[in-house]
Amino acid sequence: MNQSTPRPSLALSFVPVLFLIALLVINVILFKDDATGGPNQLALLIAGAFTIALGAFVLKVPYQHMEDHIVESIRRAIQACLILLVVGALIGTWIQSGIVPTMIYYGLKIIEPTWFLPVACLSCALVSVSTGSSWSTSGTLGIALIGIGHTLGIPIGMVAGAVISGAYFGDKMSPLSDTTNLAPAMAGTDLFTHIRHMVYTSGPAILISLVAFTIIGLFYQGATMESGDVQATLQLMESKFNIGLHLFLAPLMVLVLVGLRTPAFPALILGALIGGVFSVLFQAEHLSGGGALTMTQAYMEVIKVAHSGFHIETGNTLIDSLFSRGGMSSMLSTVWLILMAMIFGGTMEATGMLDRLAGAILSMVHGAGSLIGSVLGTCLLMNMTACDQYLAIVVPGRMYKKAFDDYGLHPKNLSRSLEDAGTVTSVLIPWNSGGAYHSSVLGVPTLTYLPYCFFNILSPLVSLFLASMDWTIERMVVEDSQREDGPVA
Image (cartoon, rainbow, N blue to C red; front, side, top):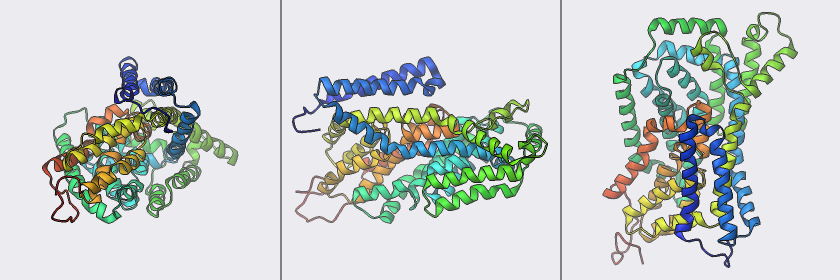
């Protein structure tokens, strides 16, 4: 905003947020789980248009200035949109090639239903630590775990919560993660100091999560399938796909690529291509319907599945719903959701309303504990309004760096707070790129898995508790004449 543009009042800055929340609540009431199929996208667009009107007619912000911010906001989200489209193709080809059915097949054989949820959480944590990517973990291992849990009769929200909890813990604690590198860069500390300091908040959060998943597994009395039903499902899968351990090579290659710091987009493209090749090599008789498979037919079948998804009709409702999914086209509504969210976020930023809301939080700071609480609150607010986890780290990081210096707090306190709320809460918001991605990839509505994302909910709460108790809050060495718990003069 230029100097002649009036600074928005706090009351005015709240108006677009409340307007959007009202529209989203109405959509959830009227459309329920179908709200993300179009109604929420239009709600975000309408809220964005409403914010543009406030900016133009009340704040006198030039339209071109707001449009430039919208375009820049969308530019930041393009990578997420591209990854979503490629993951859609990957899911389709990995089902067609038998990769996902094989992972589910062996998972059903070796995983005890009672321990499934904590095992799923731990498995995703290990993979995410190794690769540094919660998104890649959910888009590969997470898909298989969702299928296994669905087959075992475990509520899909619980399974998705375990997958996301583990994936985000690993993402936070991995030196390969982009957000784990971004947070200390914004705060002014080094990577491994940041990771060591996160142990105090992420450690208790993941331990409590594992205990919770274990208790749910021990005492949940859901409609778990009988062993005979599981055996029948395994036999049906064997009849429809050529199952074999060799098919694990595809996810292994993708995970190795990501672990070698290959960017997610090309690594996932390669994964989708490998799925197509494996389809021709190992599922030829199924692709051809039992006859000889020609190269033209093979190409057409793989391309069709990559853009429209895999579809199967076995007469078994469970198998049909489990494997009839994927394709780039299945991700278009999520891409649309992200683009509309970026319009709203861009207008909030261009009109200065986003900064005004964040500034109001900062004005309430009166000590180290409330300062850290303000960072956590600002990160959550950014995830709700800017709709992007990277902005939820960068903007509060820039805002609060001087305040942490003034209070004599080590910058690792700031970097930890940025990750404790900025990284992990993005997946809990349906219109955020993180929430939209995981909802689409896992096939579970955000509000369905949200209550079971124990780690993501606990991380900011543990961080807030430690700040309020002044535990693990490290201060810089200051002169004796300077106050310990107030701004350093």
